[in-house]
Length: 454
Image 1 (cartoon, rainbow, N blue to C red):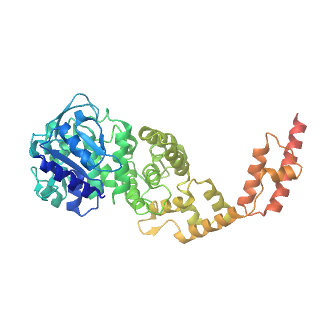
Image 2 (tube, rainbow, N blue to C red; image 1 turned 90 degrees about the vertical axis):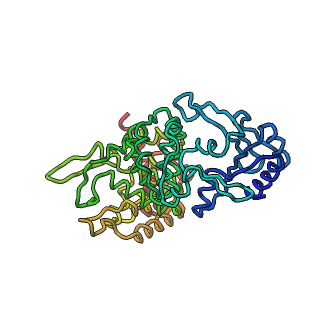
Image 3 (cartoon, rainbow, N blue to C red; image 1 turned 45 degrees about the vertical axis):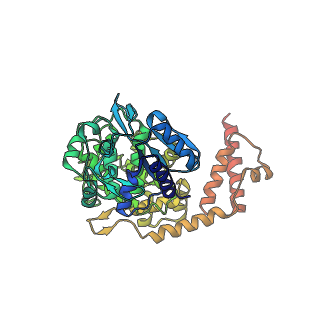
């Protein structure tokens, strides 16, 4: 059964008991925006918690996420069922709240606890009546993110990030008084998990993820969670290659271009983090030499900054492995496409990459220019053709450890080094039979040399 149908069924039972059920939050907002949202949230008014639990038994197997919080679910369904409540902050964290469930506080008081006007609208499940106490529909039509109640808003610091995230996702602006309110909110008590949750939505759902960071910059809220990005503001680049301006501006443009390739890459979230962090190394390498701005080796010397940035937000190994591997390689595709090196060179580049095809799409997002007009990189076709040839190379038979052993080379602690040499021959396009002979010769010479030195 569809979630909306389940909501109607519950609403009919609740009406029989004298209560009323509303669609709330993002479901109402997205419906008015014409966005399909399968996550249905309903709020039940006029029914005590115990009575609601009994009603839910008629619709399925109730799940209780805390009767004292007034939050329920149904087993096997993804509908969220809540009761009206008041919240009072008891600490600085996102979860530090005292919650009072009150089924009879009315729609205005219930909606007041919401973060933004566009999320405060309620729609009667049965009649379709829209309840809009705080002008959410007009703000939605005008594309404005606006807080509802200043006193309640500041009690939850996550709302600062949510405001920026909504602005990015929907391409909205944030009301000036909301910007000003957010400037004074301390984000240091938030958990990395909650911060990353909003960051992930901005990077994966927004057409222009840069809006998320531009809004946080306007709110003066980069210091706690994104200090490295703040350091790129005003950090100059060579205008020949970067007429767009400072490193911040370049990074914002890159993440917006990268967003267009999210459906083409192996790991969209890690790919977007690569785009976000790829030039952090310029913070520690930018200098002026002979009247020109340079950031030599920023792709490698900046890795401690990248590691700090990513480590602050996530402990996910796969994400770290991807970003830490790809950042040092990020310049190589555009350089290769410009210089057209031998096949062995591009084979090595792709072999070093955690996601070779993603590296090409990143190069598209990171294309610099000469004097604002001529692209530095060669065409995409060159890189994809070289990737095809790399894959063909890797599909051919190659030297393995058992081949060396069968050829009479005894296993030893230097086996990995010999196999590494064989791998280099493979990337150079040397056929297996010839590569095996060369690897055996290399291994035997290396062992004789070591024996002589003993």
